[in-house]
Length: 126
Image: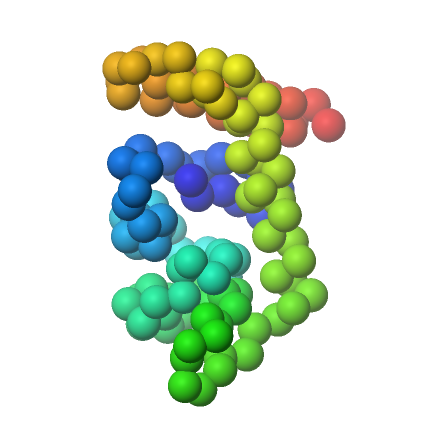
């Protein structure tokens, strides 16, 4: 899921459970050109960092421990990553999403979009 700075969902890509999340980072970004990309350790790949640098997007991704040369990141801004986790939590508050009642991928994603629309409507009220 790609979300904005306010924790509102923007895009989704459904993958198999065993797939690495970082493989979908660039397709999720698409043509978006944010000022920065805030992500967790799982997105610390050279390909993602090259793409962000080429498009002048600040990488707010902590470096993995195994990197030879650690890459500094803004710890203060990184703390805002809880917004994406909160967004996932709000989506999973819909029992149908959390328990994956829909076995058909299209039905499941349709309900994810409905839940995302509800999150957007609640954000506009607050």
